[in-house]
Image 1: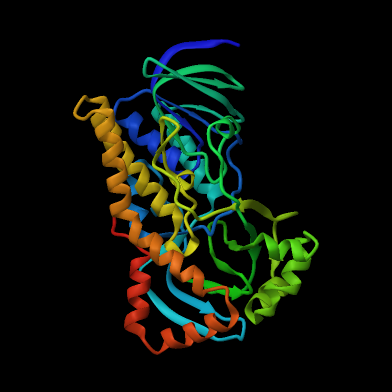
Image 2 (image 1 turned 60 degrees about the vertical axis):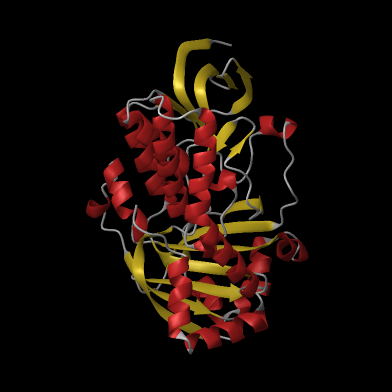
Length: 374
């Protein structure tokens, strides 16, 4: 297998939001970056596809022309129980809708235009470290780098199985794009037994319908997604309406399995971890997309200081962990506790009723799931 003679400053495994945003920032700062993505852009991913406005300026600074894309602006929230009660609330910060199919593709184009070496349909099979240089054995050749970052999503690459074991994972995610009758400036979360489903508008005049539930729900319904939706999700009258009357645009849903929401680490196996690879973020934390992008900015600043010899690698490792905790620990705790309440039929119904009568508490909870502009 051919070995590339150029040693990059940074290699990134995984070209989702965190990896692409990190690569663009680093290459703009003058560093040589290579990125490996196992799929080919554009492609769909399981994701709620709502982004809070905290990320708008950041994405535009990277070069994504959000202002010219006629994206839906979302400032209203509805949360329903299986009994049909709907909690209503304004989203003071608000957000916008955009599909991962569109956004990831825009970022990939920007990465290439700015000089990132991007390999698509390319898997990293193994990584070796010697004299502070990482050697990556990939399906497209052998490459070397001074720093390695993992942005590979919820599932670790195969080569890491030899080095670490993951805990038992028991959630699945399912996403559709649909045509339906829905208010453009609104996002809704609909609860059902052991799960919840979000719906909001994205680009191209379509709507994202995405839910998460336990693998047990699927197993109990013969591993048949449609059967599970009919038996469990459609017990919520709002979901019954959407599943019964909408036009589904995919031949089959986009799915992901073996999801866990356990926090992992920001530095593991001798490389930096970001995005869902550092711990899949519960949807109720307030959009993991903004958190992934903010993480990339934190790490990009730290890596640039490291490459400029302003800090040591050990200092960078500690600084990155400290900044990660400072920015996300509260949001993750709030999301965790909310997740324990929602998806439980009786508890959810009572909780939503209570929050409807305590608007100040409700707004406080919402604010804790949205960060500041960065």
